[in-house]
Image 1: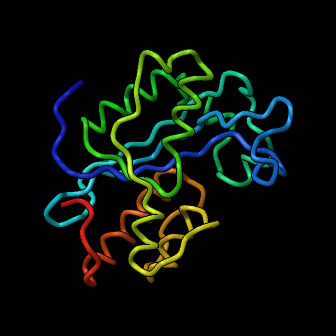
Image 2: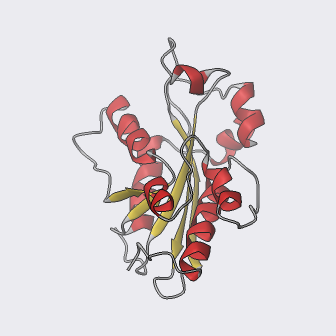
Length: 193
């Protein structure tokens, strides 16, 4: 693991999906929440501005061909996976290296999706998820109810414009980080200090 600058890390995931996956909670035969993209941003502990970013495409093992639904939702294509994708363990280790032991934040329970992928691929006893917090709880404590919303909905709910493509893990992570920083600037308790 290389040395990284200090500061909280906000991340987001995109994972395999099909029409109706959300409603069925990926319970239909052959459906798994395999990670396809990990996007993250490290914030300066002093200014809460982004100082470093991480963006990795992951080739799913059980469903290596992305559904048309997923491609339309995220803009991630099968061709992009062929060009830039890596296997999950390689991508997850690179993400751990990027995190450098920092506390992780995400909108929702992306920690459970990562843990599920480790279990799915037989690595759950070899690699662990770093300390993690669900940003939904922090937003709720500060008067913004995000239950049932996606990460790309966070900026607008917090009064910040969304920049980029919705359902792109890096752009969604940037949006959540920007929303948290904006609310802290307006007086919300800083969960990173």
